[in-house]
Image 1 (tube, each protein chain N blue to C red):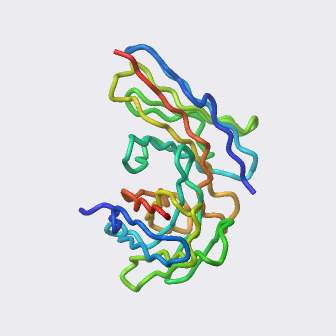
Image 2: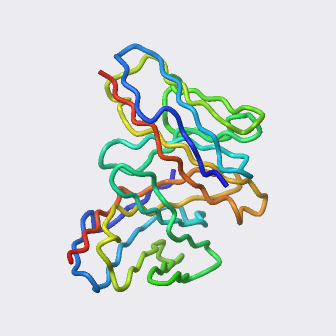
Length: 114
Length: 116
């Protein structure tokens, strides 16, 4: 089955700096890659996603890049703010016509220091 | 437009008991997935329901079962509870389309289950 590795497990940056979180996946047939942000005690919230027919997607300060050949994708947050502090999860899905589940990485705890 | 809702918020049970958790999907969604999130881990897929049937199942024992109702809401049942079943149980809803271009999953707030 699919396996998703996420790095780093913790990341501390200064406010205004950029943050990058990287994920690799094992199933070359996966074609959907969402990123979720989870604040303490709250639900995972989708922040951005990308499908395999696209190499990069941006939404204001957040961007995701996908390299299907290398089977890795990354989350980029620019001009970080203290409210960006949370746990971020990457996930992969969609391999084949009958795979609907999301396989998650173990998460990255991002701390943005004022 | 209501998002995904779950009940109850918290639940405390003892080993061997049975529990039922409930989920109402986001308006317009027809598919419900259940995930277990242990402390400090990413969510783990339990199963997904579509058209009132279990469409896909993760690596969870038969003690975990579910149901989907005609209004698309869903229940997760866990029998013979173990200490290791203590976790946050998340429900996610989505809309199924054959081109798979709009099946983004949106999560509910979760049910925190503690097994003593």
